[in-house]
Length: 327
Ligand code: AQP
Image (cartoon, rainbow, N blue to C red; front, top):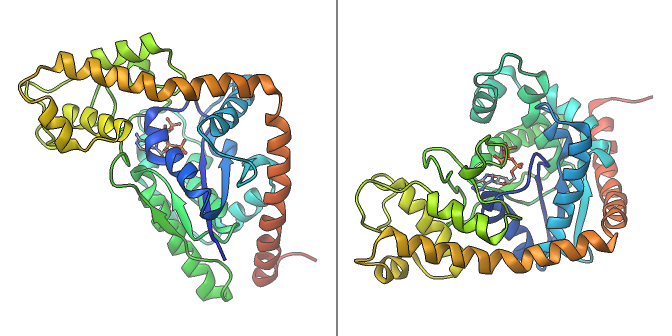
């Protein structure tokens, strides 16, 4: 039997090179050898304020990008979280399993809530909904970026706790982190991860940035004080981040890149990185435009939701039975 893979991305903005290198690229690699479910987690998006019209568009944009990077609806199940109501139902049940103390320790809640006048209860309980997303599909493997590690550990704890209390119900999932690219940092501040909702667009490369914008963003990316190109995330976090991006995009190892730019300045290095990114992203962007014009996205998402519902509803029925819910 193929192993079950589940992951999701929030439609909170145009997805970044960080989302792509940390997560989406792995989605494509895994679809041949596994039974993969990839979700657009729109209910997670509303834990922070969203413009309703824009949210709808972003869901559609993200689905088109899933297809443009190579996800194949014949191989993977692609769907929108809110189209499968079992996510909300299991999310609630898991809110009644998770402890307040566990949720309070989540660093993403602290980061996303920082400086906000009002923080919703949804932002606080987000990890319970994320656990529900994963556990509904009896998932073996979850490909995500490094920032989701803590949420994944909590998901595992909740599965084990539920199984111990109510009997074997959930598969306990493993996290899948890639070696290079699991944490891409902001171009303007290498101490922060690259994020699609960062207010400064110069902090990130978006998957649909036109070539000139990509070149400009790379040329303006902060670098470290001396002019040496070497990989040292502690002492030279900015250049190390650019080297990591360059390595994954070009397929060259970091050592090869360091040797190639020995004695050269940041100018040449950034120029070549910009061109490598343009070459990598241009075909994805061309496919994205074709997909949007094809009018196929809605149908693919509906079919995906139907398939997802069958699996999710089976798990939910079992959970309700075990907990003693329902008439
Ligand atoms: N900088 C990153 N480097 C590597 N992987 C990353 N991911 C996010 N940022 C990086 C991975 O992308 C997947 C989807 O993330 P998400 O949309 O569910 O939420 P997020 O982790 O909060 O991503 P963003 O871009 O920072 O979104 P906003 O700005 O809305 O909060 C996940 O697998 C994540 O690890």
